[in-house]
Length: 301
Image (tube, rainbow, N blue to C red; front, side, top):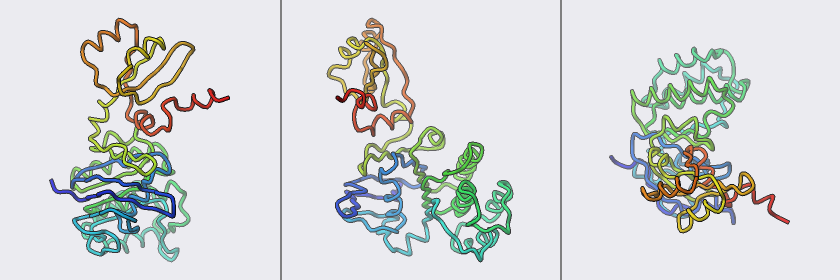
């Protein structure tokens, strides 16, 4: 598979602040990738550079083998959907769907209209009068129906209720399977997304934390809980990701899952409990500032 995106040592600075710091990765065509990270991790900045809105401060960024900044060739193959999209109040929602169609070579008008009706939009309403969740839903219709070779969604479900979010993920996956393209969805939460994602790109304070398939992330770490001394003895020399004192004399740790059969036997003999780690929790642990988390607040003074 060819790479749609090639990012090599890319940095984006605003004065002394590095929103993106020396980030490198490649994304192959026809994959759904989750761009995950806490608020302020640099997700929006990265997506806007991919869309050609921002120019990197340093490094090399290529989209469809070209520099995307102010590039009409790459922009005709790319759509960027976020909750700041605005449209003139002189256009109704029906007008907007009609007017955006010529901008997208692969526009699927039947799908756009079917989703518009399914989510019960009023064709005579204006975009600015929609609620936050309804704006996100309408914007997402454009993102899905555009069928752009590179589709970028920045926190697409902001304001949506649970039922609408589930419908969004379902229709996105169904249309992707029918018409494969490269899709990147940014979010600070992974739990709802992971079932439709193939790869995860995790950012932490502007840096790349990891980039790997979802199935590998699920196998990356393991949790142990039990007597604090027994836990500390077992994890000595192993790569620790997170630890938390959840009760007096008891310790919970997360470590990289590189346990041999003899390790598992030692765990059982020590009376320790082995716990699975959700991908959502693991991303939180990997991007936390200290291995002790919020517990460290109570240890000061």
